[in-house]
Length: 347
Image (cartoon, rainbow, N blue to C red; front, side, top):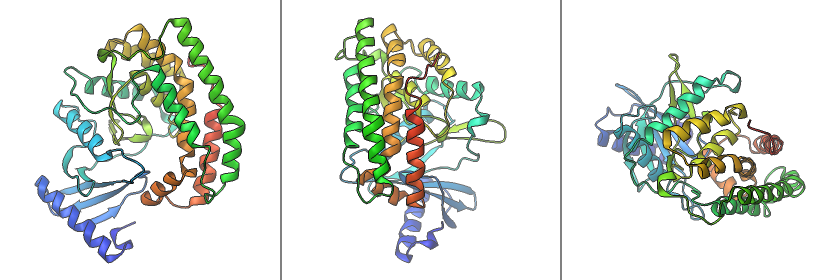
């Protein structure tokens, strides 16, 4: 989709925004602007200039969703670049009023699940350890950050509860309601009971705050669905609109539960061991990494079903992801598959 596919007024406004940001960054004036596919929550455009392409990103905002997507991404990437961590796009300029950011263009392609190898997982771990090298800046908490077991449980509980009121206008909503009632809600009750038993057995207090030295900077929504690999094999990680301070156990669980480019659970222990060594995780943090995996399988099932919520439909319309009914059918199939992983061992 090009800007010409939109209304002339929208086209002119986008071009003017692109010109302001490139001027602010000291970059060449954009000659063309092309909508890129794949943005789930945002609008992403390629800007072609005489000096090469750049990326303009416009972030979704809604009165019902208070997350500062631009602020989170800009802060996290700026921190990475300040530390010489260049496996993320370079931040060039931003406009907070317009909720837009200008970034370097990354050449590459998505990794397929079948080509995912241990070397790629280690590159992801290396990135996490690099951005967490001391001293760590006092970034804001990440989206849905959790600093106790109680907060982890409450976060998933809220996600499950939201699915009790699905949007009746969304395609395939009847099937979604059946999946939630017959499978997701009972699975969550069983997982929650397992967490409570496990915490008691390990002597972990549910309300105990995670010590500050056990909190990490998390890319959040972290995985190979948000990465590109170039012809040399270098990985570049993308999309940090939910990033911030968080529990390492949530980072690990999200990494292994994101459904688009699944990471084999056989690598779960290796990931934990490297973080334990690199971040100095204590025994309680390691226990949380193991206890919470199934909770995040449930949470990611809820995320997959976001399209059936009113806000989810609004966000997807902003991002323009294509045929609605087909997408909803696909999301149902993904949710069903994700629930099938609850209880799978990572050992």
